[in-house]
Structure formats: structure tokens, C-alpha cells
Image (cartoon, rainbow, N blue to C red; front, side):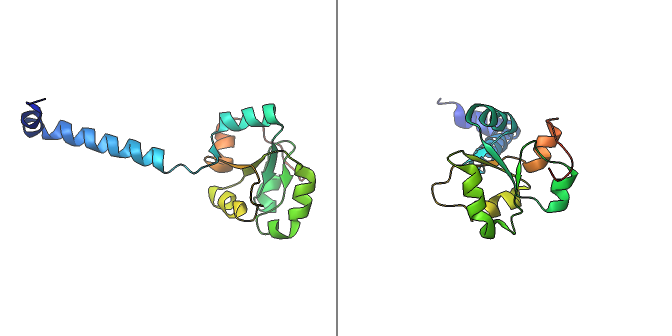
Amino acid sequence: MERLPEFIWNHPFLVSLFLVSLGLLLWTLLRRQPGEVGVSEAVRLINDRDMLVLDVRATGNFSRGHVVGALHIPVTELPKRLKELEKKRGQRPLLLFGTPLEQNASRKHLAEGCEAYCLRGGALAWETAGLPIVSGDS
């Protein structure tokens, strides 16, 4: 331990590399939002807890492809359709499906205490993982 200052002085590149790596690791861990889940965790929650997938994307994006059984309420219509959402949701938790921006905007409209999760990486993460997507307005 007494030679640490000497090591730092003699190896500035290694010390800098260590500090940058540490900073990037902390930045990655701290930027995660509470209630944000990855694709594999979302699939587990859908299967184990009967989670309702709420697709908050625009109608055109929903028609091009969405999760099987997803309820479609665009983020712009969500404030007007909250009663419909609560009726279909019951006590089930929600998975907000869309772009990260749409997901965060939707969370602001949901009732306090509503168990809702955002999919990390949004709809693109789901598609990239090769999970099933269906087309049409169903």
C-alpha cells in the first residue's frame, strides 16, 4: 500500500484506464430507471405473473408489429382511456411497450400505485431479441 503513489506515478495510462472503466460502470448502473426490466425479465413476468402488455406506440407502428395479446392505447389517448385500461388490467402488472420516450410519458398518466414496468430498450429490444411479433390491428 505504501508503494501505491509510486505505481500511480509510474503507470498513468493504466490508472487512467481503470478510472475511465470505473466511471463508465457507475454511469451504466446509475442511469437505469426504477421499474425498468430487460427483455428476458419481461418475458418471465408475462409468463409467471400474467402481466398485461400495454403498447403505447402510434397506431401505424402497432399495426406493423406488436406483442401477441397486447392492449393498444397510444400514449396520446391514454389520459382519455384510463378507465378502459383499469377494467382490462384488473390487478395485473403492466409492461409498457414502445419507445423509451413513449414509455416514460405513459408512466406519468398511470394511477399512483399502479405496478408498471418499462421495457429497457423499448420495442426495438424486443424485436432484436427475436421474440414473437404479430402484424395487423388485432
